[in-house]
Length: 422
Image 1 (cartoon, rainbow, N blue to C red):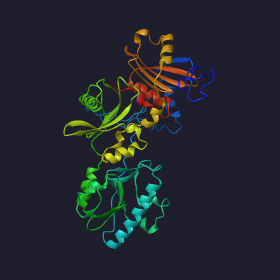
Image 2 (cartoon, rainbow, N blue to C red):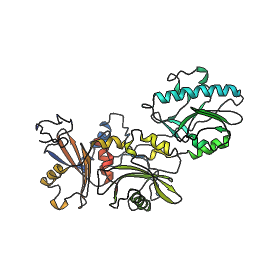
Image 3 (cartoon, helix red, strand yellow):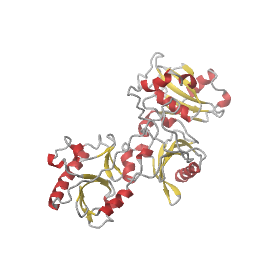
Image 4 (tube, rainbow, N blue to C red):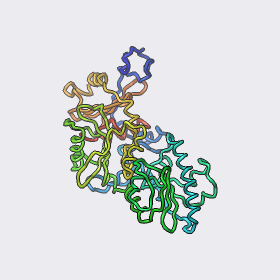
């Protein structure tokens, strides 16, 4: 047989290409009906395949209500609609500082801690993911705001500081420049500011930023501006007003008149996150962040999937963007496995009479080395899974069925290959 990746002739018994290491497709195909999988034992296997006590970390965001304004049902655990509970929100940091602490001691303390936390962040930026969440420094893997006590053992910190109510803010200095009594630069990148509450306000400082005393009112104002809370997260459905508005915005931004296949689209009351590809270029899958501005919708960021640290890129550009809107997968990594040619599977599906020549070409097709999703003009939809030298083809009813099946088949399901609407 021939490797579809490097076009090298491979022994028929090989499951991986000896040249490029990619899975080798042979001419074996199994047709399985989704309904047969989604019964009895399959409910158990949805968890057993993961070995993690039932955690499904790659589900789509928890939807609090849908775009049509109806209240969503409570989270359930079924095969057709596997929904995981949203991670509980970490409580916002609260100051309990000694307001009578001498100001010289305050500045000495925050200067020392500021140097330590920023050195730690610089030295571990490749392995630690800190974001600005609601204006505070947030540790994403730990799902917690950062406090001095968490840093003990990680940085050379004096134990006398552990009981102090030291706070870490994550601001762009340029956003602080408007407030009086602060000596800050016009830098547009996020900087970790270390703060401590005094009777006059909060003493804050950061690397290369002298800082100063910011009043409680001014601090509250900037924290509000950095807030992630823009209302409930909602899925945008096909044919809704918002759906049409987004499609027009994408058309205006990209200049493409071909239309778009939507693979992911969620919103809150300020931002929209979309994963889409032009209908005439299904390999060109991109992520877009759009924003509502005075009643209109504009693309703020695009091609984010090209960045290794796309979460930081978004956070720095829009610190108030609720990152719970992002899809539950790393699109950049997923696109490494994207495949363009599935003609061999089409040929086999024709031979097995799963489809007819009248169905060709497929209305939509997208896939990776191990998974492929088809839609045909007749309305038939299929999900394919390559494993142990065979392609298993499942009939699926709609997007939700395909998504549920992918979550059963894979620990890291490539949900971006399924289109939700077009």
